[in-house]
Image (cartoon, one colour):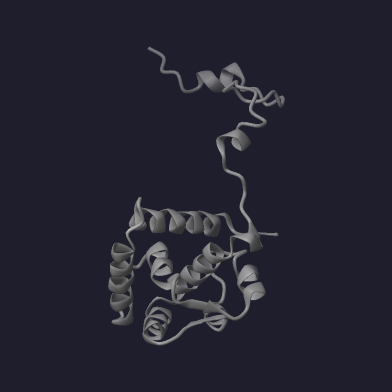
Length: 166
């Protein structure tokens, strides 16, 4: 298991929520397919919403990955990274190939992030997500909202410096 940048973990969870939301309960594959088709045609034409989550949603059913280890390594860094290296680790066939080419040409940084997000979503067992549950976040919280005693108490002189005197 490998740790990934927290923003990639977040985007992967968001993609899962978006897919579940569009599919609905009970799942309506027709709505899902219409959304996929609309996004693919927008991105293939060079437009589309400049959003990592929407791009990864458009890619998720079409993308194939040729270098999983390389993509995991790229998932360490959310901002920056080498878009061309990530583009070489994945591809889309057929009509989706036009969408992939347009995304990578017109929005290279977002496309890099979207490709990695789609990869993480499709391969959740290859990476480890930080536990952000309330139980984990409160594990070391003793319930007080005051600062821990570390010897850096504020002096009265400093605290009173901001009081207005009349």
